Image (tube, rainbow, N blue to C red; front, side, top):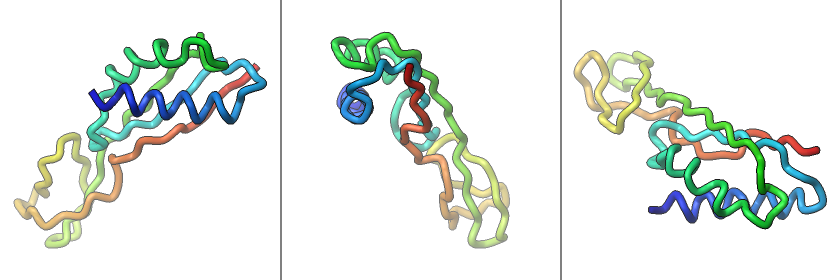
Length: 109
């Protein structure tokens, strides 16, 4: 489960940056095409935050859909799975979003 190490890195980065403040809330953005399972991150968050300035913080996760542009017809469409097919039938597409994994915001006391 790579989500454990990802969550550990997120908590470490926040705890290092806000070592002198109590973190109240963390908002992550985990795109649907990122390969990261948000429920697994939620499960790991409290475990890895224990003993840090992030302990007890609320975790909010936004899950933006993927977006792609078809190189054949020029259409722009949403995708939620790594099956890259344009509604026109072409597989010649460019993924433009949905692979995000970032700390969107941190609320401190």
